[in-house]
Length: 430
Ligand code: GLU
Image (tube, helix red, strand yellow):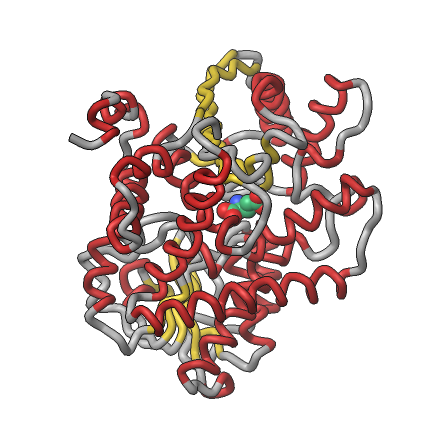
């Protein structure tokens, strides 16, 4: 009988049950097998340390009252405070947030950041709320989270559906409570409030940098490469621009409202203008509309899922037609799809915890700058970012080649092993 079963722990984590949480656990189990981790360590390292669920009553603009559900999950406390984004999306649940918190742990460990993973979320549709309603909701959530967060406890950042303004409201609410300004409570703030130069672009630029490294690795010429990007939010759009700078032609993009295709390449500047006006890529005149399914099967050299989890599945993993799968989103590929990709060595996967790590790396820089009240130039930020990504890429690639395992298993093994070592060195508490 495993330790988890003896402790009755599996029944205790039922409340995390969700397809993404099951997926994160399945990935962990594969890694634990690969590392031959003692059975007794597994539940201890796998399951989140603690979580908080809050009811968030707010007044709507029409005077009515509505209660939203908010969550925060802190995965482990062995390396320092926990770190991770805050998501506003109708499908947010405690289990989804728990999975995202686990992935943050392996991501921070892979890139050598002194953090455990965390994630938060509110089940809401931010596009259906006014700015004043979003402000009330964010301030209410921050208020409820006060006993659970702090610059040395847990630091939030933007994720799907949140942005710099959300972080500004959080920082202000926390600071009002403390009686003095506390910039280090969140990262991804406006630069004028102690945010870091380059933070907004960091995830997308990191994706671009790593794709460029992958192109070198497999001998692909960027000026002959085409890319397809699923999701045109902060990560997908910056990644597209970054790839264009490397000479790659962007032939298709999408967002929740639909996709676009143009074999000659999309004019990203025109598209950006269109998105600024219409808040969606849909309806852009210089391209043909395509569905999400068509987008993922579009022949290209580089496929960049930059939206939500579980997009590349058993159903479409055999149909994706690319040389590089660059996972800008968290958890875009299911373990069943991984099994298919493992049999397709022509597809080079840059796994999520490596591919999108640029965001949290620059969040770490922002936190360090805030704690020291000493700010860096954008060149310093980018230079330090690329050094860390380079190190993580080379380590992952070397591990994958040496042990003859996938890039995903290599990245996850490096991250999980570091968390295991830290926990073992400290003892049972964290
Ligand atoms: N939400 C981002 C992620 O998933 C950033 C987290 C952070 O900067 O703390 O990696």
